Image (tube, rainbow over all chains, first blue to last red; front, side):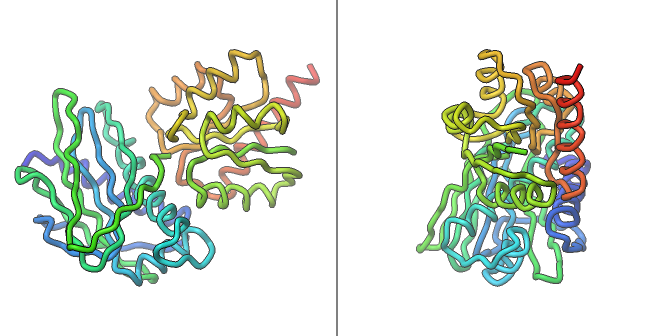
Length: 178
Length: 126
């Protein structure tokens, strides 16, 4: 693994900024832990990074926390499966990834189009050589997880595609990064 | 104040519209990408354009270049997660008047809009 601790801090700072500023929901972080991408989510926003840093970021939720947090963000009650729900989750993931990559000093990084995956207890796999760091986050509206699997690169590469599976997956494109 | 809000996220457009309602916007038009904005802007005649950067079909910076190429002077505020200095410089060189980084508070976005409108009014009066 070649993950820079500054990158992890960037995600912590970006997540806090998004929740403090736009959702008015204080967030606390548990100690980051080495992930294996075996975690299961009911709803996840996934964004790929490319350029001097490559990999992917997952913002994963339980169904209940996704509804609560997306609704707080959109300032209206959102229901799972609607376009507005997917849009809110995608934009949330986009702002976290975009805010983090802006803190990658001296590294030119692009973020890709967010996808929102909605399926009970799904897992998202990455290439076997991509270790990840899991950051569990707690808010009054529920718990969610930032799962970062990135590494610095000296040459531009295509970010590894994340794939979801649980047998009943549904992926909803949620626009592009903002 | 007539405002064209260009963002591919409906959630974000709604949030921005809510803020605009508190600072005296009299008419708001929405567009989901740069191409959509180009098709609406001449008919709507906005006083200011709030523009996302990364969008499908046509991104914000391409819209700015296309719009400014037509000698249009309506103020444009980029509202985006693209916060790197190089990106800000690129936007300003393309013709963006001001810049607001997501995430933003209602107060910070309002201030950017009001500052931009005040500068535009002063320039018009000069």
